[in-house]
Length: 338
Image (cartoon, rainbow, N blue to C red; front, top):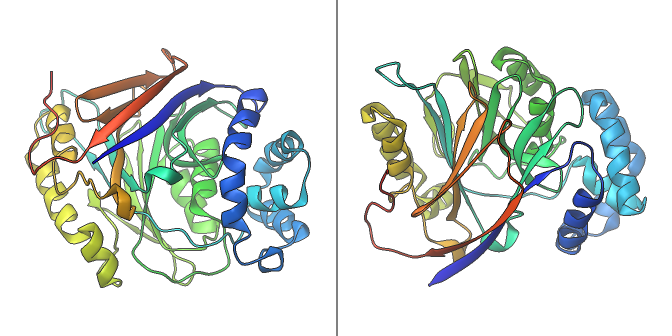
């Protein structure tokens, strides 16, 4: 089988017509998801606004601008706040790598594993609040992973628990981190302060080489650990069915080996595009949709697919569209470094 994906790189300093086009494309699907338990099942506009004002007040002007671009609807405003949204579950592997020979800058790396039909595929280059941010978009203005001009990079992965609570959807929290943080320490402080509605793992790396893995949950205290690699559980597997379906344990073991034995970032990429890290169970919602390598010192991102590389940076950012066709393959190395 094969899967066709659409990706595009978009430069727009403040939300305008380009963002509006994204909204119009994805809103029908997001609206159906957001209202699947009915309008009454979602927080009110005032509750959403108060939550943003309490925890992420710097985002309110952008939130209001986005609402205006959508036509000012109540449901749109409540969705865009990402306050207590419906549950959503993905896969993903991520980590940090340091060159043992100190020839290359440290990198943050990740595989994004999810259902193809739910992918936005937009790499947004923006200046919304205090600094420029380049991030893969989710929920229309949230972030799955990204880097800012201060040299802070971040990515997220599902934490392996179905518990939900009172808090924000993690993509908006990650967006807030990238908009505001000047270093890993500040990013950690934000993650400790802002509540989330599900369990996630966040990996952080800044241009000074300071890095952390942060475990966030709606019902547990935020925990900061030093783990070079994480997949879809925290200290132990708590949802065995999900871990088995997504090979979470096997992926973590393999990724740890890759990070330990790689002497060049190309070897890390090779590992990420090799099973079991690279997954082709797209119809079950656990296929690898892209591989990302973030280099916070040089403020670059490299997006990889089998036999394909798409580099972008703040200095050389090219607006373009790419069609990616992924095909299921046997257990083998899927990428060869040039």
